[in-house]
Image: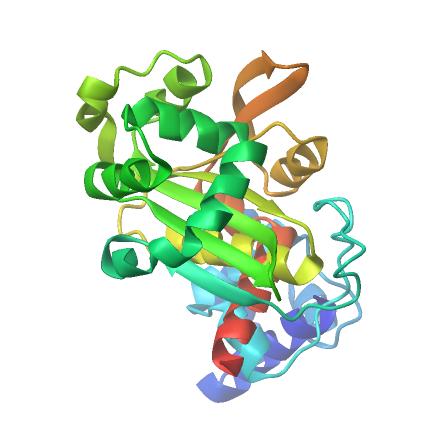
Length: 296
């Protein structure tokens, strides 16, 4: 991140045709957190000798109207390696191979549901949250349940496969926060499921067994969330896996709900757009996902 910050500062200043002194005045007069900024400190930042905390970097990017993700990609900057190994379940069948195929199921791709039903059954068997979702619809088949979730809650399901193996998935719904609490406590009245529908927040269940699929799944989730126009929208993540709880903390989330089910502690975690912008890990996932999309 050091090299990104110094390159952006210098690029913006030279493009604007202003001196370091003018840049210091611009920043110090537009932010209470930067009011003590001086010329010596700014010069050291621009030369990469020192670097401000990440939150202060983000504030400076915002003041300059800079999207750090675009800058990282456009300048072809290699980010420092982040140890993601604690965030996914290792799968020795796909170890060291990040190649995978993806399938996105939503209202617009409903015709593809039939070819993904086998994967849906596997997810049903392994993901408690997904199983509860299917039960909540009151439908007698997984296919009809998913169709109902898409129609009533604008559901989207992403599947990642390596050859014939399912290696990652995510489920996104547009519902009110109370939905997850009622779902985990098995208190959903499926006849009134429409009452939970909402423009936001997003509610996510996800799992990944390889580093590449984790980057794709979570990068897509964060990208879609940041694209929601409502600045007050919130992202809710839920998992019973300790490794995912570590990731929630890295994303600066707040635990909103705990429920022990079959000896697992399911945590509902709330993330805001500010949380994401102030998280180095979130930035890494967003950059990795955009790079994957550009490569396509």
